[in-house]
Each structure stands twice: as C-alpha cells, then as structure tokens.
Length: 105
Image (cartoon, rainbow, N blue to C red; front, side, top):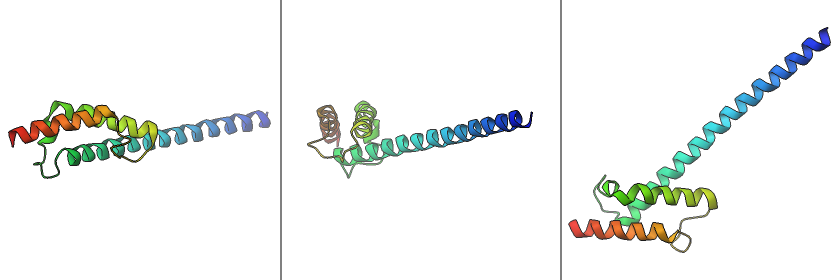
C-alpha cells in the first residue's frame, strides 16, 4: 500500500512541476513576443521619420500592419533587420507612411 501512495505522490509532483514549467514557458514566450513587437514598432517609427512627433506615425493605418508583418518576419526567421532581409511588403508600407507624413508636414 505504501508503494502505491508514493507512486501517486511522485506522479502528482511531476504533474505539478510540468504545469509550473509550462506556465513559465508561456510567460517567456509572451514576453518575447511583446519585446519583438515593441522593437518592430520602434524600428518602423525610425524608418519612417526619426524626427516625427510622438504618436504621429502610429496614427497611420499602415503602421499596425507593418509592425505585425515585421514582428512576424523576425520571429519566424530570427534575423537582424536590414533592408535586404526585410519583407518587401514592410518596405512598401514604410514608404507609403513616409510619403503621407512628408505630404502633410
């Protein structure tokens, strides 16, 4: 009977440890995703116009889409951001935002 109780305790302990590890992994994946998203947002702002007023570039409808595409590209490819490795769609969206910003400022 003692053997069975110890066995159940071991299984419960392993399940608890697995759940803790899984929740930590989920937290770090979420943190990494947020960090990539923040960096992509900063990169898009800088690529459009470094001197733009805060919040001005974020107001364009292309901004969220370009940040999402760039963050996805970085997450999937794990590469540095250069114009040679950046998706053409993101480059195009940056150019459109740059043109719209310069047109009004």
